[in-house]
Image (cartoon, rainbow over all chains, first blue to last red):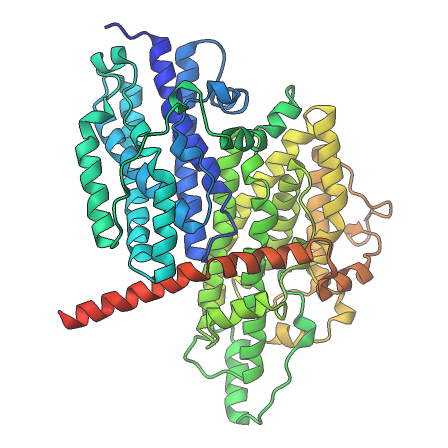
Length: 251
Length: 327
């Protein structure tokens, strides 16, 4: 087995960063959603994501063995060291854009965690099994809203189509292969293996939603290597401000 | 208290059957629950709608000052706890709106009244959350004061309200503990953290005491509400209880209550405390609180910017219904 603890830690960090950054984004909605019910489910999803991030980043810290825990990783890294995908850091925009982002990401994350439930790394497998149940709900709620908005009014169809269009360039990045050593060792999965299932799931919902699948375009990538959009730095400056301002404090 | 306008109690408009009124009063006196389909005096119904909708509005507006810190919570655990807490507040708003709807007023009417500025919500949410310690202070003091008020309401005479309150009280007590835990951590932390904690207590103490509403001698309709058992203890009684419980908690974590007149009164077995600035309270009730404009704007913006989403959901449901009918 060629994968060492550091490799697994890096993988766990990228998984944890996806959850953390999207959880942070969804937290921005709290108190401002179009209905109380939407407010509650967005907070619910955010809460699940922050929970996943905590487990994954804590585990990464343990594997590294350098005294970092989930908080240290979340609050004391800068943009170049975050390895989340670009999709999750995109600004919320209107509810149409938020839901399109959620729809794409949750469908991806569901297949990913289902596959990782059989990871040879028992901790990652355990986290993935637990998270897959949560994410199945996220994917369902987001898909339902895609259909409501797509097959709602003219305005809602247009807005959700714009949201989808905004996010579409970031889809291919989700399917970038992680470290080959990890795939070989059965710790990680190659997401290319479930791309057909992803496309089928997305297309089925888009059909119900009377929405066209956006045209293929050049993928925007870089997140997994720390090369992010302009938005991440702002997100971090807000999320990390207390920890950075008071580095000696415990909360 | 989450209702600030009780003193504006409605007068009965029509003459009601004295026999029915007497039977109603007798049921209340026997501590029976009044249920949605039961006959009730119009004034009771109106007062309850006002009280319950104000309570629901307070939960919803209350999500804003705390929501202000979700993106800046200082640890993953604190972020998760705060998200869960603010989500609970939204859930409370939902149950109470639903319970109030059983009185024949729709949620839409209640929400419209909030957005137009006609309906009130607790004065406390018109103060800003400046530092992380404010999240501790809100949990500890504001939720602590809310519990004082709501525990007796589990025995309120209106069944749906009393039952909603049972679940709400359980969650509020978790909120109060998480707030106190934040304050405890800060008070035992660095000099900067202690300063934050004391400053938050200084700013939130008096507004928290005001949450119980005007003093009893200036709360003319309290007696009616007490007789109807939709209020079970007076404003001043609840306020006193709150002070007596909270002062030792502040002492335990080394924070100072910002009241030079605060002294233990051996004879009363209670704390005497300084005069409350009622001018400030009434100004905030009138909508002149420091963040009143921000709060109302945030609610209105969320509602207006979300209109297209609600319209889409309605249009989609109608399309589905038509399809189901055609099939």
